[in-house]
Image (cartoon, rainbow, N blue to C red; front, side, top):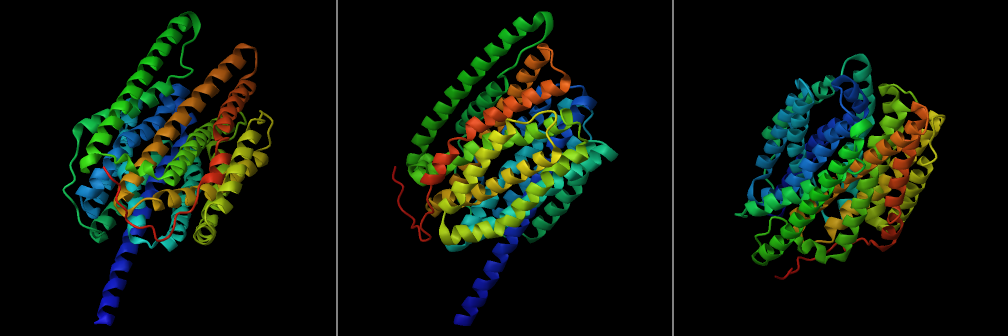
Length: 492
C-alpha cells in the first residue's frame, strides 16, 4: 500500500513538473517576442513613418492590455481548468502574432500587439500560481531560479535575433519566427497539460472589470501624454490640448481605480472579489510588490531607451545594439540557479541589498553617457544592471507570494503582475517622453542630432536613477517568509 501511494505521488509530481516546464516554454515565447520589439522600434519609426512617441505605444499598449486583463486572471484560474487557461492564453498569443505578421500598417500592428498581450497576461499569473501551488516552500527559490534560466534565454536571444532579422530581412520576421514556436507550444500543451486542482464556481463581476480597464487605462494613457506637444506655429495649441488630455485621463484613471478598490473591498466580504485586496494585509507582500513596481518602472523604461540611444546616438546597427545586451541576459540566466539556492538557504537580504546597490549605481552611471561613450563600457553597464536585477527578481517574486496563505496565491500573482505591468508602462511612457522633450530642447539650442539624442538619453536615465533610489530602503526591510506558512483566516 505504501509503495502504491509513493508511486502515485511520484507520478503526480512528475506531471506537475511537466506542466511547469510547458508553462515556462510558453513564457519563453512571450518574452522572446517582447524582447525583439525594443531593437525594432527605430526601424518601425522609419518604415511606418511614425514618431518615437507613437512607436512606444507598441510596447505601452502591450503592457496596458496586460494590466487590464491580469486582474481577471484570479477569476480565470479559479473558474477554469489549467488546460483550458493554457489553451486560451496561447491561442490568443498565436492569433495576435499572426495579425502583427501580416499587418499592412501601424493600426493593425498595434491591434496584433494588443491580442498578443491578452494571451501573455493570462500566461504569466498561471505560471507563478502553479509554481506556488505544486512546489514545496523550501524549494521555491530553486524553482524560481530555474524560471530565471529559462526566461533569461529569451532576452539573450531576442535582441540579437531581432537585429539579424532587421539587417537581413524586415521587422515582420520578428513575428514570423515567433509564430511557429507559439503554435508548436500550443499544440504540445493542449496534448500534454493536465489539470492541477479543481475549478470552483467563482463569479465574474463585470463592473469590476470595467472599472479596472478605465482605471489602469486612464492612468497609463495620461502618463503617456507627459511631455506631449507639438512643433511650429501650432505648438502652443498642441501643448495645451495635450495638457488637457493628460489631466482628464489621470482624473478618470484615479477615480475609476478608487471605485475599483471600493468595489473589491465590498465583494471580498463574501469572497466574490475580482481581485482580492486582502493580500495587502501582509506587510512583506506589500513591500515586495512596491519594490517590484519601482524596478519595473526603471527597468522597462531603460530597456526601451537603450536601443534608441545605441542606434540613434552611437550609430550602431540593429544587430550590434542587440549584441550589447546579450552578455547581460546570459549572465542573468546563468546566475539564476545559484540565486535560487542562496534564497532558499539564506533569505532575501544577502541578495536584495547588493542587487539594489548595483541597479541604482548603474543607472546613475548611465546619466554620464554621451555620443562618444565606448560600446564596451555600455555593454559592461548593461551586464551589471542585468546581474543586479537577477539578484532582485527571484527573491522578490518568491518572498511576495510566499507571504500569503495558499488560497490567495492566484490573487497575489494577479496583483503582482498587474502592478509590474502598469509600473512598466508608466516607466516607458515617462522615460520616452522625457527623452523626446530633452532631445528637442537640445536641438533647438543648436546641438547636433547625436548630441541632442545623447542629452535626451541622459535625461531619461536620470529620471530612472531617481525612481530607483527607494530600492535601497526596500532591500533592507523585506524578509523571507517562513517555509511552513499556514493557511490562516483572512477575515471579512
